[in-house]
Length: 244
Ligand code: HEM
Image (cartoon, rainbow, N blue to C red):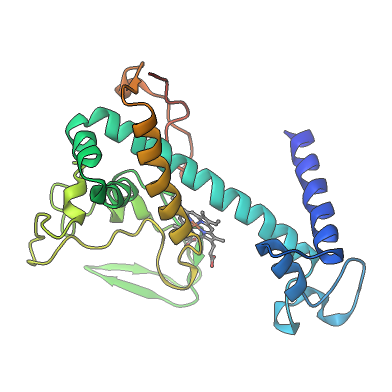
């Protein structure tokens, strides 16, 4: 792991230098060109985004963030959606018949198998009263569990059931009489996922392609025995053995 980490660090450091020298029409070039400092400069503004952009350390952090936030999450979305479809043949057949259902499949996977189970840590700067006797004191560390919010029965009737139809206009109404609530799989507020549109686009392209290219795709393992990733943050099966 150390070797891989050092290699990736070296690769990104080289990439930043290269994009500064010869920028292209890509996202990373834009980030380097917006940057207020360049390698080796020690001016007062070099570590502050407020002074005109990202410094080298911030760019490196951004490269790692984009890679991990953009890869692990979408990978788990694709794995979980494939698993849910292969274990819900009626839903798979419905999406194959009517391609307009694919976005609903993606939304329901995000809700039911939220790839990020929680947000990053929050720290309260003042007391927060959540009502019903729950008060978070000042200076507390808080982990908001998105996966729990996404299975809240007050907003998602029959929350443990995978039912893409709930995201369609004719989906089962919630007790308040409205359509199902929007899920919280991409977070909420100022840190709402910057990659949400890209992630949705990737999944609505990849899933129909996969399941059209392999019409007989099926699981070769007991879905209840699949090993899941450990930890509190990222959710998804470690492996998804299939055959065609
Ligand atoms: C299924 C796919 C994805 C899921 C479920 C997801 C989920 C999330 C969530 C829940 C947050 C908020 C974290 C928090 O509040 O602490 C977040 C933030 C973020 N996501 Fe995603 N994400 C996905 C895909 C992507 C992609 C494809 C990219 C970029 C290419 C991306 C880049 C980011 C970045 C940079 C942030 C930090 C935003 C900020 O702090 O202002 N994500 N994501």
